[in-house]
Image 1: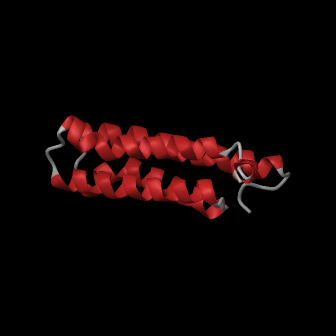
Image 2: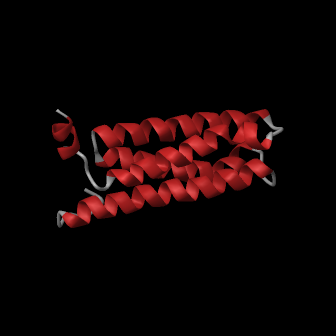
Length: 123
């Protein structure tokens, strides 16, 4: 039974595990670093939960749209400090750093999965 489960494992799933670990770090960061602004806490908790759910679902059932959703979530994490008004805070630095990492991992997975098949990453 476990051999069947392991045979369904994609080597690209490790990139989703990285995104899951980024989401876990982002989720605990308000408690680790004591963010003062409530809107920063809410954004970080909601965004990290969304990245985690998307990464977990991509591990079990890959689809291109899940990686594109992670790209959009990464871009949201990059711009959210200015949109929600917590620019120039400690939370901003974590949002930008984790956002870049999440978007990068999702783009790399899109390229690896689609270009290995000879397709375009946009399809």
